[in-house]
Length: 311
Picture 1: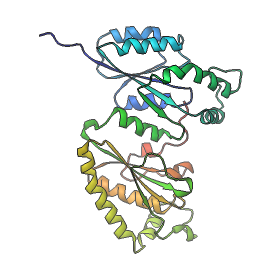
Picture 2: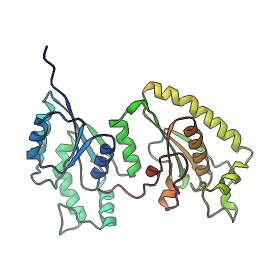
Picture 3: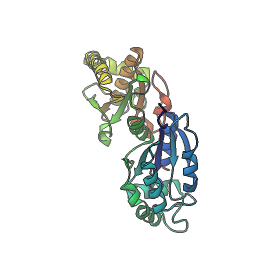
Picture 4: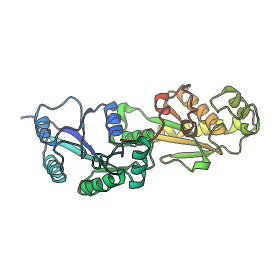
């Protein structure tokens, strides 16, 4: 009996300039995809008709492509969608016009569709061009309020669920002054713990400092709280993993996001790492202020991400 056709996995990544296409392509490349950006659409059929790739393929397409047109891209999507040898997913990264305008202003980049005009003119033109393609997307992610870390986490949920049988845990700290972060599965409030902010010698330090950790840890409520949180999380993680969940984000919040929440995030992450879980740490307020120090058990290459998504 002859073997069936080899299915090639292909992800087309598109969306308006500044919405995060480059970040997404790099994230998928880190997940094991072969990445090609801005390949002319006319060459795509030859790429697909070749021998099946050893790795899935991610292809970046935007309005800067040499032969880009809305109709041409829709024709490619239609053709590949009916090809039994191709498993196609169209990933569309969107963002609000206001956020895109701010990103172009901050980077002082010219918009590719309005090089001699203001970015908002190019953004409006691009929205018109990409509207029909947006409607054809299999996966749509709005990056307006996402950091690069958040976008990578979303992409991991879509494209690398349960990879290698591992479950990733992200332990984060944040400031309630800036509201609840997007994408947390579990949130714990640390504002009842003693606050190092009121100690002059500790105010300028962070919860990554041993002196701050000792001060917060001396609170009579700390040990019981940390133990119970650790017990709860370690009880739930195997159940979530058995259900097929690939990623869990746990957030600790305090008023300023500098001392108590950071201390708790570091404490839990250390305990989970020692128990064998794959853990990353992210301190949102420290990142924003450039204060984060890579240390401890987590994947601090991720924790060190700062700034906006950009292209």
